[in-house]
Image (cartoon, rainbow, N blue to C red):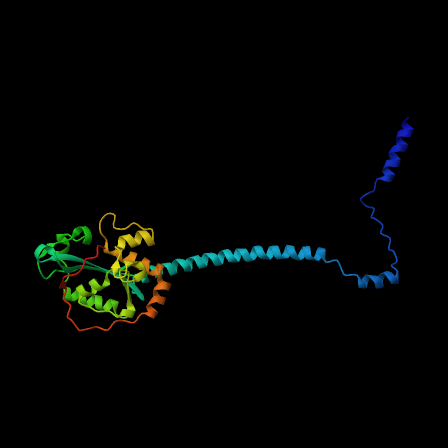
Length: 281
């Protein structure tokens, strides 16, 4: 039995390859016909493509890492740009919007006097906001519509100062507002027809020709905005008129090209204290 087991062990040892032994590779002769045929067959570049793809992936990861660095720098630049914009956004723009508030003077406060002027730029930022001293005693502050209270006019600016400052701001710019005819009359200023955008005068926004809607009604119907719910804010009115103009800008500008400004019948001197048809704005 022992001899049989030894024989089996020897056979196993002979069959198992040793570490020292090297595999023998036999070189086969390739026929000349096969070599000629091999030249006509397109080479299989799958392995090469795979390797190239792997290299491209490694490159892309490097590029992405660079991009992430670039993104960081761009975001920093964007922050700088927004910071610069925040400094510049309060500047004058080609289009501005204005709203003036009046108080009542004379018997029963029937006559109007300029009490406040607010101007915003095309971004809606307040550029100018000043109260104006009345030249005559105020008999009706019209607080419901104007938001003016007695203490607002105690340290108010002089009319001539406000008039000069407003004239400088609006010069050569498109002025948007609601009832601008009354505002310019109260300021004793005129403005070119081609640079005036009055939401009370634009026919598509009127009830009928010559009958304007209230600004609050237009804001709700056209823009779906509720304004003047709490305290009256002239900046809100100016921004609303500006939004209405921007909403209808294309049609508005096209309409203006067909219009011809009316010639003034006579050069009447408008006074700051005058009777006007009040628009509840």
